[in-house]
Length: 457
Ligand code: UD1
Ligand code: CA
Image (cartoon, rainbow, N blue to C red; front, side, top):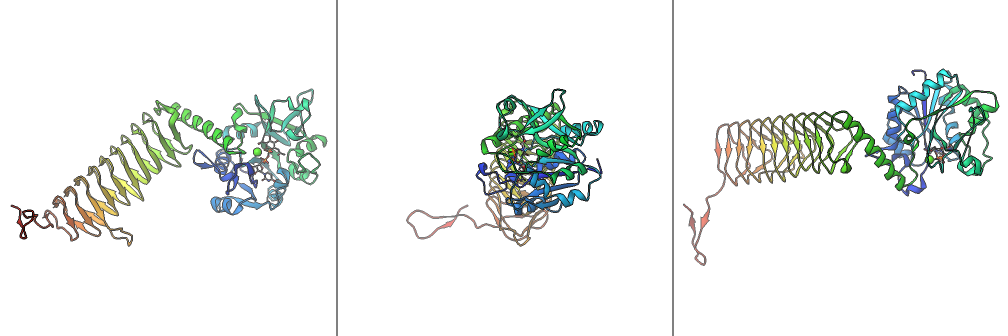
């Protein structure tokens, strides 16, 4: 589809969302709706994309970056008017076909886009509408066909008479056009309708009136048309998308025994025989290997999890967990953290901006921050690294070191290989290799009421 391009309409305010943000930035499964649409278009093989922005265009532009062309629609005068703003973009590409879609319909998928394109080309149509048959077509534009079945017009809900309202085939708001034909008709749009808008849908009847062939591709999956105009519809889209993602993962061999409370982003990758347990949320581009147990109650974001790991009640952002590591219950990983092969992080522990080496163990109630921990290091319970490490300084702990329970390692400090630190020690000076450090005063005892104490034996 290399000579083809796409225009995504994303200027609307979406008043009923009652949001300060652009409507297309509202999220479905933790992913802005505009990203769903762009990703489906790219997956269908079209990577030349123009986005029409308007309300909160600053936010949309910041989010999109330099990836796609952007045009502005300063006044929202309708979907036809929105496409007119891309006139220059389309004129430069008038040889091919253009896919026009709505930025607020995130479930439009690449299979439907590709299927419609094949029909568009093989039928030699100037426009192919992606339609669906809905039990409740209320609110959508209806596809009007003549007696021989050919499409003649799209009539909006607001303009439809009682008979037209009975039609259950609706316009998804996505279409393939021969670019030249679309450009030719845009100039003739009027706003003579019940909403006083320039409707893109009028292009369809104009093409028919000028003797051009127009077709409709009816999607197998009627959910591709679903859009979100308010928070209730947004929640419904989330639920439909959630079920779709979970079903796909199950078909790929992921074990989700109690799926009702599991939320997984469409961009997550999960290997077969991994079990995802209840109340688990997986956001964005998380990748999880095979044979893992994730959950219950895990929340993972930007995290890479290798094969055979177990994460129980873990919150993780910006982290990597290597093969066979065991994390939790009730642990947090964040800020560029790497847990290496077969390491363990125990209950109520947090690892931040640190590497925990192969086979090392950080058990319960510990905090390791801005540290490089070697292999086979053993932490006692309730050990912490102190100091922010904001200046880039780090604690370095050599292989096979043993950190006693309740130790504070004051950043930056270096603990040598095979070294030990005593229970309860505050370690602020480096400990050489194979040395045991006991930097704490002997316990003093004194009889209650007496002046003099003595060291305990
Ligand atoms: C539109 C279609 C309708 C279809 C429905 C599918 C028209 C006239 N109607 O109706 O046939 O069934 O989509 O969801 O096209 N937008 C702009 N600028 C504007 C107006 C809208 O960029 O001036 C964008 C919106 O941000 C949105 C998309 O176009 O992403 C659709 O606009 P919306 O007002 O929601 O159209 P509908 O009334 O839903
Ligand atoms: Ca809409």
